[in-house]
Amino acid sequence: MLYSVAPPKGAFYMGKKKKPHLFFIYLTIFVNLIGFGMVFPLLPFYAREFHASEALIGLLASSFAIAQFIFSPFWGRLSDRFGRKPIISMALLGLSLAFLVFAISNSLTWLFISRFLQGVFSAAALPTATAYVADVTTKEDRIKGMSNLGASLALGFIFGPAIGGILSSVNHQLPFFAAAALAILNFVSVQLLLPESLTKRSEKLVIKEGFLNFKQMYHGLRGELGSLFILIFLWSYGLSNNQVAVPLLGAEKLNIDASMVGLFFSAQGLVSALVQWLVVGKITNKIGEHHMAVLGLAIMAIALFLMPFSPLPAFMALAMMSLALGSALSRPTINTLISKQTHEGQGTTMGVATAFESMGRILGPLLGGILFYQFGYHSPFTVVAVLIFLMLMYVIKRKKFLKLEVSI
Image 1 (cartoon, one colour):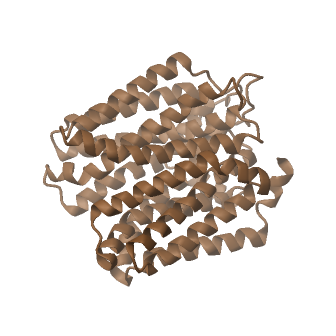
Image 2 (cartoon, helix red, strand yellow):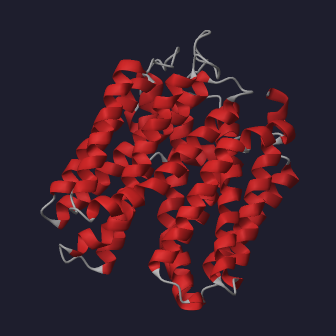
């Protein structure tokens, strides 16, 4: 049996006493994404040293998201049973090991093992950190905690590629040694300074319901959280689709090189971080979470639809930053809604949500490339924009979010 998780008494609510504790949660997510960001732009070059084909490079890149998809529900269940702190600690140790393996790999096989391990332990970090925030925040302050968590993700994505590029100019292995050291330092900080947030644990752990939990995902889609899980999938699919579609669009239509596309993605990350830090909490307090989620996803859909019509690089950059705005408004809000409505443990629920998000990361780049080459450069953007709009129309028509306002 799983229990809804109640916040600990008195000490850890959003306020002066709790912020130092959440700092290490945000740092965990930052370390997770900065490591991912270091690896992401260097991966093709690193793999080419071992004579990997384009297909193998694509599989190597997607192995991270595949591992996340498989293991996220499992880690979420573990955190509901044994607590958040042990799982976060294991995630940081595992990430450090995975980065070290990547740095010293002498074959393509070991690169695959390392990349898969990065996904496995990233799957432990993200849902558990999200559950921790849900544990220690009140319903009124939860959106602020989720927004700061999202900003940590965005900052990792901003600084990761830049740091990786600088360090790789000294030595290709150096970024991965640095990421491993950063994970170890965060592990020590968590051990010394992070208190456990879970006060009521699950009575038992059913291992067979952890890995590849299609049954639970299926029941989740049929339950009260179904529309929210679909929205977090579409959010992830839309952004991941751009990792392939945007560089291809820039090269084919606008004749821009990889360095300019990289600057556009960095600008996206900066917009996302600033909006989640400074804007989301204030606006959400005025209009409510369900309106904010709909607004953010609507902005994403419009930006995606307009992007292939960009006549100049500046218009494409503006569309990408608009997409970042919509993403920053919607993701923390959807996570907040999921955490408020769940009747199971926060770790279990966030694990399933992360599995849907990972599925979007798997399908986004894959389908983005296929649609681009089969149906033209408009198709990857148009398809995801239409899917988001159709889902929003369904949500608004069925008023799926309205019941949440009563429980807040």
